[in-house]
Image (cartoon, rainbow, N blue to C red; front, top):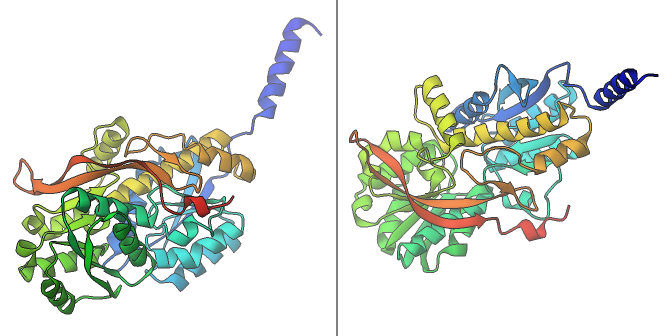
Length: 387
């Protein structure tokens, strides 16, 4: 064989050794909350995820996104997952908003050998002893975002806090996280209902306790209702509020308007972040959707980028679970929040920032980034995760 033929044979052999891009679309199952007062949370995750698709592809690999509404019902989420696994043969999952749905759904997914990348819910048990090598989180661990609120309240000099959150896993994680980093006294602690619409009794208890700050976690429509009633009761003028981002997103801000001015917020992302990935995301969002952007949308976008990085590295081969997992762990993508890495339990290590609601140039209230709360912050449960 002459040199040219030898070279050609070697080239063909090398190309044959590389996995081909998947011929059929790789299916990604999105189970999320699309209906009810919290429906906009799942809609934003879905729409943020879809913004990362380039001509129907992620990482150059053709994908098919299959979306279903869990209705904020754990049993419904579990049934959808079982159907996606058994009937659709789906091996990649994402989308869940609420921790009670996550707790009922994610164990079945990862125990089957499929992968789950969370764009939001990240309960404490799945971050620690019940962690799983096929479970990744691009948002946060539930406690950590509220840890940032506790530290922010401490930085602002508050000494006596009243805390409220819904009575489910994320609510319990929220209060635990806030208390972990708040150095002052807890004047009162209340767990509300996930379907609550009247907070008059709780607000009366807040007033009676006379704290110098209130921390509350009520995502989606719950947060809008709580803030409106807090302002209507006159408490907004008497007792300031420090919250993490689920209690003050773009939709909540648009709904409550000027009543939110002066509110202190902590977040891992804001629309004003000055990095190339966020500018690309914000430009695409504003051109595509005629509505306020939320961090849920940014997390849906990052979840898609995480999957895109692994699909690109493996050329769409998701059958080699070890290779796909290794590619995901590298977090080889440009996050909209800037610096991003997975910690030992495959939850984010990231910075947290202080935001404040101020009047924008157009007179409308905006969330403005005003400082840094944590740098390279992980979570409290990583040491308990043994993979």
